[in-house]
Length: 167
Image (cartoon, rainbow, N blue to C red; front, top):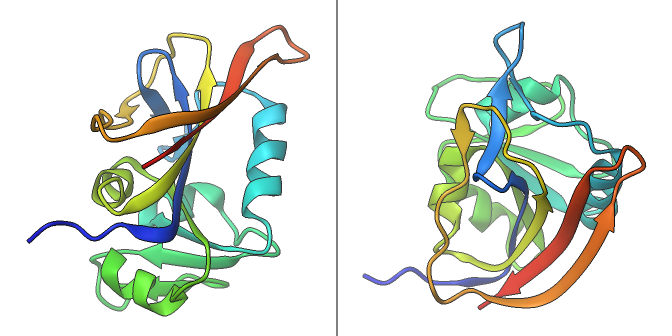
């Protein structure tokens, strides 16, 4: 059976040139391998007021629910609790719970892989470095088309671009 594209489902991610999206920090938790405040501001502007759907490891890396958003966590761990978030056993359950509301998949890699065939929009911050990390963003299928691109340089001199794809 073919995947059904959800018209209100978007994926938001920051990706280095070498497809790295994350690394493990000194505490053993997931982290971003760069410091780009402009991307964090963009992420907040895009996702505020909307449900955000994330995997358990992403939730644990945040350390708290993100304000002004419906925080939704996907995990296979039965009886998992996440203070300030709703917990779902799978992506299909979370999508059913958001209904026709615009929702954002915010990571991690496994959830991105599951959601890519279902999402109608992809919002990528292309970070202009080859990062060191252990988490990769999946390859994109050929049916994605770029619709907007805004290129910038951060205050620290790091090149980046906000790119939106649709299908």
